[in-house]
Image (cartoon, helix red, strand yellow):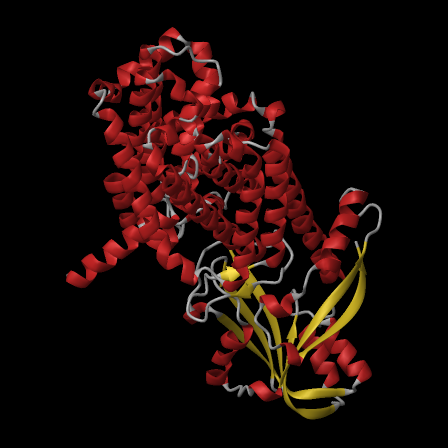
Length: 622
């Protein structure tokens, strides 16, 4: 019992650091943007109304929607938009047209994650460093250079892994939330009546009196739920109970106290609207607070970068991106990965965002469109999961998701007003990623169709070969092929040029499925083809770590002895030549061919020993 309590405490502290980093730093800019927008007249009634809207936004969207409802939709313990997409697509697998539409919607939502992944670190770190301006206006010129240096250091450290840094995430963020609560309480004491804003009637009254203004400021109010999607995305890392416990016991109370403290400060000193968070602190505490805020934003950014690596790996295994160079940074935790292309691609985009927008206020104008679209997509997918997957009555499903749909749509519609003020930026990033994903998926489908059309039946081919067999050499050959039962090009090239066949031959096909995990007991499907030849299908979930040598070790119990030193892996690397009229627009054909050419190959992705890989090419037109 003591061990369980200790484990729960450790997971809860870990969740505070990883899951709630983004939402914990929203206090730096959310209130400032609402009142700094100029849309809300500065009156006590409006301060009460805005604080009430903030509190009930956190309650409805985070507490009820994500913490209580969406966390229930786990895919074998895993969460996130990719897991939700897999659940929804499985729930409607008997409705192919609906399933196709949901897949497109889900992949589009996943693409928007990268747009959010650019804006969130930029606005978080920039808003923290802007605390220097509060100390002295002379520091304003250093804000952007310091921000860029911090971001570069953060991304440069990624290749070393996050295991060492991760141990400090929870405690530092716990200190951050404690400071948020203390700063809030110190101001609330001076104006305790501010707590009346906890009542929803202040929010309803503000919306009733100011419907147009309410709609406009929702684009700034959404800043208070920055990172809400992380609750669901990190489900597999921590579990439901620690995430819920951390939210209701630490995070939600601390955020509420700080927001209400900022409200009390504004009632006492309206001029503090220029930066209410930092002006809550006494002058002697500004430098330590800026340092602590910077650490908190770096932690929040780190969590998002790690999430980008994880999502990319999952999307690759679902077949929507080419196999990229994935490096493992931990010998114990397979989830600790580093993808250089994603890392530096994010960094370049974030630098562009910082240089283009130049302040957290300008970035706030760009934030919201992508994240509210993701929130809306999550609600839509949740409906199909609980209706068709869990078989709940229609009225209950509409009731459970209808309210959230209306709330999410209101936030999304409000944020569309930011489209020309910067909201286009994350949408452009998401659109580019979405185009790459759909082009790769469709291109691979066309390529596989072409391969199947030209394929030679493997059993018949082997039967013909062994009528007059070639020389057999010692060792095992592993031929990777896209389709089971088809002769791999690498085998044809080997017979043509080397005129030999290995003593043992495995024809291996990798299948990725829309479930997070597939256990080792279900990993291999094996069929004997005779003459020491086997057809092997290896099954992986989108969270499994592909490792062919490890998976093939199970062959030893099936009569096939594998020796690492005498096993060769043959990859048929196809050279794709785009042709007109293949089913895609010409520019997408060229894009697919270029992506195929630039892909680093399956060797790294499948953890194959590099010194035993032979790459053979064949031209294929699409």
